[in-house]
Length: 232
Image 1: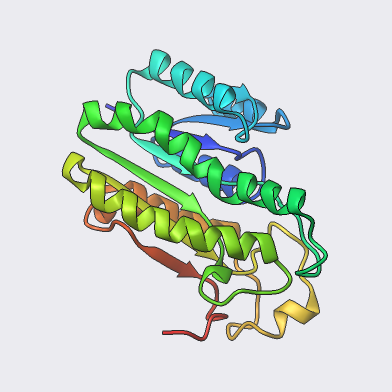
Image 2: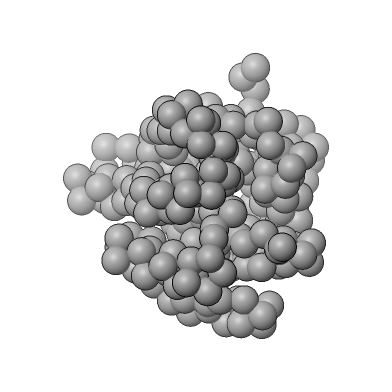
């Protein structure tokens, strides 16, 4: 029986490429995005598409309910995200900080809360969050992302410890600068491998964490950053 992978906020970029990659490996894919691109991509791949926001519990629940009704299970949940507020650290307003928390942290909490009961019934599941290299070395270029995805790392460890007994795993992928966005010289010169990463390189790690080959990996933050982070 094919595995079912549900992608949230994956209408373009790394999430979309990962959906196409898993489909090529025999997975059934369901994709939600706010733009409508995810719904179209899913239909092109013969899967289930849904247009909705990962900032709204009702949209996520409607999506996961449709996936479960269609396929009877959810083997893999992949949480991607849009872009949160940026700016000088003290010029970001309270409202923008709250928006950053919504975009980079609560998006995962919401989807996980809704999907976990299904995975508990299955006694199996893999949750994969596409995060950022900046959780270990905060970068002033991405302040709200670094702050709230650091919180996501803590959430991931607490969650993975609690639900390991149900054979549910959660891991974060920490991309560096990836070619889903135009390369900037100021960032390029910081990367030891001297190039932006490819979306296909992120997708390969998603596949590994979704597969039996990743079945003993949980609660981890996996750097895929060309060596840009210096901490060990």
